[in-house]
Length: 78
Image 1 (cartoon, rainbow, N blue to C red):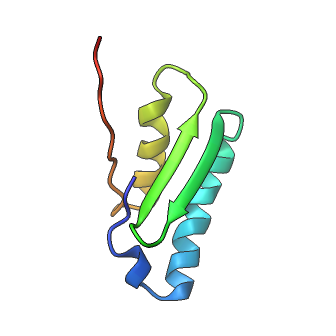
Image 2 (cartoon, rainbow, N blue to C red):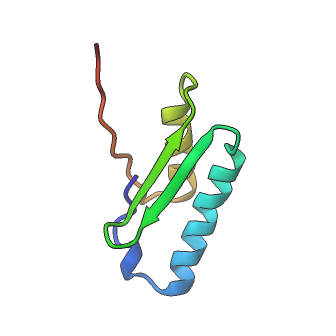
């Protein structure tokens, strides 16, 4: 996911947004393998264990609480 403009916000706004994202990821802790936020690119990278629907469920939960967050995802079909 990308959170446009996050790196340009105040430190307290950044921390608040990341606390919200962290709370969502903690909620899905059994499924989240890795998460990293790159401030230079405003990009949140999350790797998860496979579970049907989870690739949309987690971003939807984040977007509900951080409305400016946008999902960036590739969709491959075999």
